[in-house]
Image 1: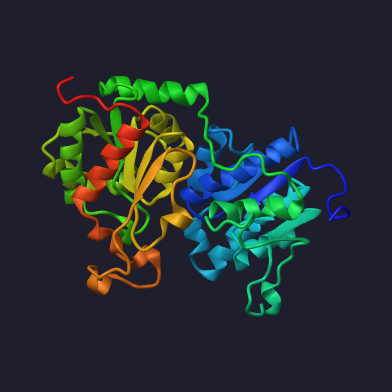
Image 2: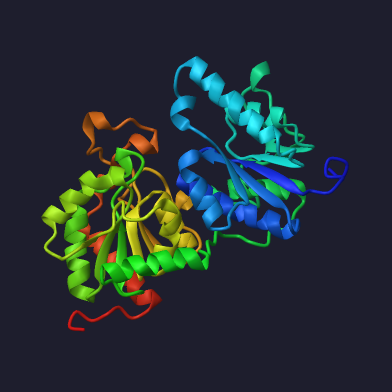
Length: 367
């Protein structure tokens, strides 16, 4: 270990090519590395659409990006994108690379980047073929520190490197210019800081999306009982669910979907009284911003993927699940199992009111 780590560490590559939630959890890894190596340059390899989130919120010094659509294209397009990515990465001359994606492609990239210290995970129980062999010279356990939450998969490389774990939860502190953008948006829609609930009805996969009509019913009851305003947040591709909520709910709702870029969402969440939404990247982002979170879960267990970094209540139907998705469900993949559809409005409203009471006094309906 000492021989592997000899020499200064001035630049570190973190390979995290998955989703927003994974990047948010991995931000805790980046923070610990910054504390261990003052002045180190942290660079993430990620999808191009996520770069702003990392650099605008000081999670990374830089992001080297790839286009996921090309990586899923023809063999020629995939090869072209891979070569271009490798050329950009090798220019940095990294001292360390940490592969927390742990796929055939990420292992291949990690081996060719040429960092002196290359951190990966111990091989799975099954034998790997020759082209899948891991190039790592420091190997981490699948989950570190005796924990099972996925956060500790991304913190496990620290344990393998012998680095003290100083930060145990993601914490995003948006810079002043992002806070200014968020406050200007709130002012435009006459939303008062700390007096609205941010609701996210989207998710990357249909199996994780609670029904829009149930969101509408929950919003009506929460607003009536607390007097809090409600703002819908999300990306432009989530407009279908939002339109159904707006058409069904009786409560006036502010629609902020598509109104601000991904990198400004943490600053917006920081101004919210509470976040209510599906098991998704924005849920993890809100928790990392310190906002109380009510997260809606299906087949995926909150013990592994629940929000970390803020007070939270995960809501999940009883298991095992009586299937309600019919042919849409493809178990055991939690992304394609529609168990979250079994969540009742009463349970979600109760969890929201409980968390509001636990974290401060909600506004009275007559206020």
